[in-house]
Length: 239
Image (cartoon, rainbow, N blue to C red):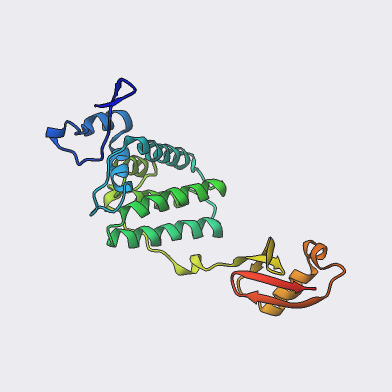
């Protein structure tokens, strides 16, 4: 205890779990409240497996919310006939590539971050395609096997999800069709514009100068030059 202003307050320190320190957390209590999959995810989400990490249950809610959100969206995925959109396939195949590489390097914490990002992207796309979520479920199985197994059965998968073939990513789905370029005038960023990924510099220059938003910055001035930094920025120099 620490004495402050005549009162005893409880101090704290980051320590490894030891019975002698009376700081051991009973996993049964965590499982009872959040479920085994949440505990499993959170332990991997804390950081690289080879490093020591302080135990703090304040962050476990994030993993629990992710699993609940995934379950809700996966159950609602009732589109079994239409073809997934290009955006949905891009998001999914980014996840396949990331998780496949992370597992080989035991980087489980970054895989879980990738799951969360992908689910958020699919939510924004209002994805209801069952094949997308079925593949997502296979990827999630090593991390949250109980949730994945339940969904696999609901989806009518054969056998156990643990025996399902691991997905392979397709680079064709990862190719960027568009790029966002920052448009600046005399070095000051003003707005962004989308261009086809293979657009040439002349097309970019002409499009920027013809855009209505550009007129307010070049009206009554002389355009000295237009500098295009591929994939990043377009700088219009005026005087």
